[in-house]
Length: 325
Image (tube, rainbow, N blue to C red):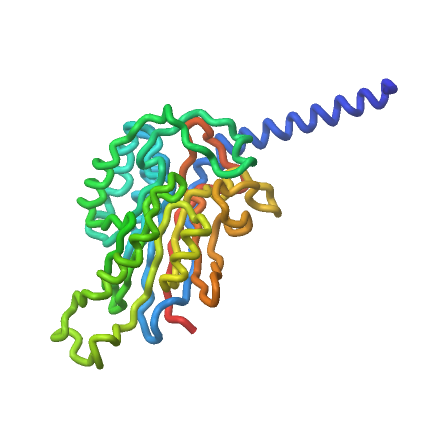
C-alpha cells in the first residue's frame, strides 16, 4: 500500500471511530433518557361510543436511582387515562420496586391490567449484545430471583388486575371490555391452553345482570364488547392465538423497539420471532381470516448492563380508542 493510500485508510478508520464514539455518547447520555409519549388512534369501539384513552407502559427495567424515569412516568397521570395497560419487565434491579412504587403512585384508582415479563421474575445479568443477532436471548441460570409477589401486591393496591394466563371484564365510559393475557412467553410461561377456558368463564358471567340490561334479546346474544389481548413478548404463537380468540386489539412490549436501530431501516433485532418491521409501533396482525390491531411498545428502559438506545427513544403510548369506521 502506498503512503497516500495508507494515510487515507487511517483517516477513514479514525472518522469511523469518532462517529462510533459520538453515537455511543448520544445513545447512552442523551437518547436513553429522552422520554417520549407516542399518541395513536385505534378505531375498535362500537359505533357511537365515547373515545377511551389507554396508557400503555412497558419495559421500565427500573432501578431505584432512576429518578428521571420515575418522575416522567408519574407525570403521565396528568393525561387522565381511562385505563392503564402494563406489559411487564417492570424491574431492573433487586430494589427496583422502590422506583416502581414512586412512578405509579399517582395512578392509584385508575383501572389497569398487567402481565409479567421475565424481568419481573429475574434480575439483569451481563450478556453479549451480539448474541441477539442469533435469535431470541436464552435463559441465564445465574440470574437473581426478584420479589414478584411484592410487585403484584403493589399493582393490586393501585387497583390493577393480574391477567397472567387469565381474563377479566371491565366497563369504561359505556363500553364493555374483555381482557385476556398470558404470562411471559419469552420464558415459556404462557399457557395458551388456559385462555379458552378463562374466556368462556368470563363470558358466562354477566356483571351487569338482567335488571341492568333489560333489552338483551337472549342469553346467547352478548352486548357489544371490545376484546383485548395482552402479552409481554409478541411471539407469533401468542399473537395467532389471540386473533383466533377474537382479539381486536393486542398490546405487547419486550422488543425495546430494537433498542439500537438504524435510521431509515429500523430495528436490527426483535428478540422474538415477530417480523422486524413490527418490532414497535401500531400495525395490523393477521392470522387466518381475522386480524387485530397490534401495538408493540418500544418500552421505557434498558438493562443496567446495556444502558444505550439509538434511533429508538424510550416511550410510553397513549392510545385513543375510537368508534370503528
